[in-house]
Every structure is written in structure tokens, then in C-alpha cells.
Image (cartoon, rainbow, N blue to C red; front, top):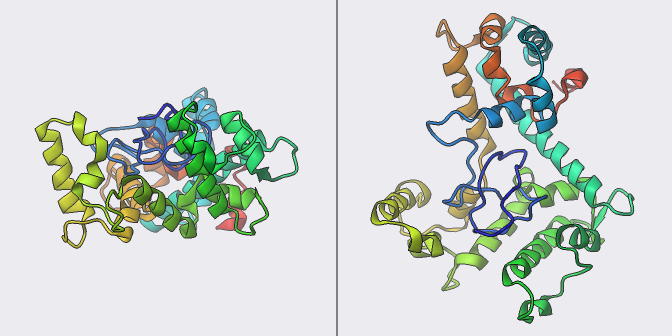
Length: 323
């Protein structure tokens, strides 16, 4: 695992970088479980930090919400529910909940990316140039491929620079050498921009595809991580590879399967979170959440994507125009 594993990302909070791709501490959403895949919550565990930030849209808002009294928390939650309740029946149905959660993912990604852009945009022109990015992330003015042959430089950091240069260029859609707000979002959060997916897969293959056949067998998938695993863990990984990742059962992960492994399905995550909230608050088991049920379990909803990644409760009216 490289040294740059500390970032909490908007869409994929509280995850640990695996070494499949490098991640600088301030920018990328390539934060993954040890197996390399994105995952929003470890199965069987309650991750309230994830939930709190997801609900309020940022860690700052989550921290602020924790200072509120239960009465104030409920009052703010009622405002939010009125925006979420699209048909006005004072119940939050599955489709309403799932739709809100999906909107939340994008909002928090935008917020974090915009904050990073402001930090990196040294000349404050609204764009991030490659030199600005290099200076902010690595303390250098540029990266040249010839640097990879410089034995005096840290090999791991050089690899990160090379990866970042590749994705930076891929996100630079107009090829002007700088990233706009939208392009910077694609760079920092490629899961928000489907055309970036092939480039992420390319990096995975560059890192792991030892025989350059354009796919990964189990040994290439497990990589150097396997050296530190006992037999039971290796068997678990092999079973996962066979049963979950190798969809067609041919013994390899092709590009599509690699993409499914590395880049999360927001729809699946939103569905899982919807089920999580229903399980925790649907007291009468009717498959929908009444305002009363949600308020009775307001502490749960202070920890869920439902209150919107990236929205500010004081600016909650903005969703009226979007819904």
C-alpha cells in the first residue's frame, strides 16, 4: 500500500486504497477495499461516519449536525423530507428515496471536487493546469516520462505522477492543457463520467496485466497482495474471483468485468442504502417510510445518503427546482 491512502472521498467514503492505482492524498476517488474494489459499506457493519457525511453532503455539515439537539435535528429533517416527498403524500417511497440518494452521490462529488479545484487553482482563473496540479500534489512543476528512469526519485511517487498525467490528459476533453470545473470532476471522480471508465481500466491493465493479453487471470488479479495472504484468505479471494468477478466463468476478467470490479455501480449502492434505511425505520413493514417513522429514527437518517451528499440544509430550497 502506498503512502497516499488517507483521502476520504465523497462517493466512496472511509475506504482504504489498495495499491491497484495510486491515489494522492487530496484528490482522487480511487479509494478501495483491500481487494481493489469500491465498496461504500462493509457488509455486516454499521458505518455511521459514512452515513452522517452522506446525509448532510460534507464532513463539515455532518460535524455541525452532530451539535444539534434532537428537536432541531428533527425540524431540519422535516424540511428535507418535504423536498424528498415528490408526490406530497407524506411518505417516502422506494423510488423517491433511491432517486434522492443518487442525486446525493453526485452532489457530494461536486462539492469535494470544487473544493479541491479552489485549493489547486493557484492563479484563480477557474481552471487547473497540469503545472498547478503538479505543484500542489507533488511540489514539482512538471512530469516528464524520462523521469521514470531517474533512479534518484521515488519509484512509487513517479508511478503516481505517470498515472495522474494519463488521467489528467484523458479528462482534458478540449485538449487545452487545463481542466475546467467539469473536467476536474472527471479527473477527481471518474465514476461520475462514464467516458473515463476505459481510461481507469487501462491503468488497471497496465499495472496488473503481466502478459499483455488485455485481461486478468486470478494471479494477475491477486498480484503482490497474495504473498501476504494465508490459505484461507487466498481461497476466499479465489472464490470471489470465480463467483463474483468473472461473470462469464472463462477464468479471466475482461475489460467490462474489470470495470464492474473497479468502478462502483451507483444504482446498486443506492438500492443497498434504500434497503438499509427501510430495514432500520419501516416499523410497520409496509415497504414505505412515513414521515413519522423517519422522525422516530432521525438518528439513523442523520447517517444516510438520503439527506444528500453535497447539499447544505440551509440551502435545501435548491432541490425544489431540480426535483
